[in-house]
Image (tube, rainbow, N blue to C red; front, side, top):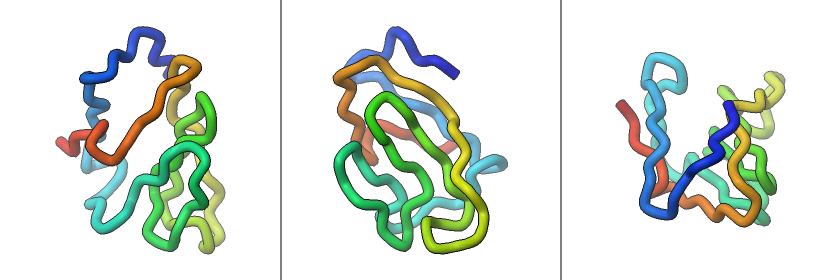
Length: 80
């Protein structure tokens, strides 16, 4: 998905059925190194989903792109 009109106070909804239950530091912002709990990682304009974390065998999947200059945090997401 291409999130073209994402505003600073918008939330990205994540379906539990697709991403599972996210606990701990599951989001890594742009410029940070993914940790063992990371499931969603922002890399520039790209949002990646990694179902089993960075050290496991499954490859991350591109789930969305955001406008240039967007700085997301874990609080930018709601799990539904």
